[in-house]
Length: 164
Image (spheres, rainbow, N blue to C red):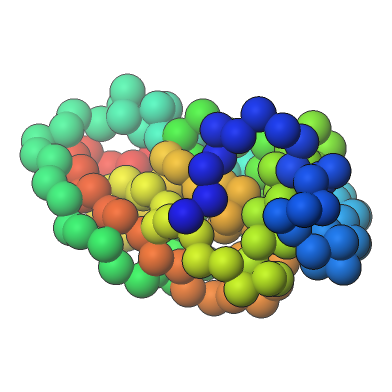
């Protein structure tokens, strides 16, 4: 499994990664940035929300009744509607918003293109909504590559009240 805490720059590490995969991944990132800009512009013209739902906002407005693990399962990437702490880095379609995430995004894309398996993402499920705690880049890359399902460790939160 890939160790995300490695201190070396993943983009310049050609000993581990394939230069061809890295170049393809850079192209996918650049495409995702541009598609995201047009997507957010189109949503703004439609007067629709462009951001992910914020888990902490919902947690502060609803009362948690119970919390339990649902284990690891495959979920549709399109069911993930919110985030814990990364709402400013990705839009609601998980297009990257800021270019400072490029190195990590490209590295993960290159790993996927080379056939590496990555760990399951971490999610919270509240009613019919999934919120990602860990795995934002993996979701973004997967969507850009056309992957529709991703393995996720799911924790269910039972809350009272409506989700805003």
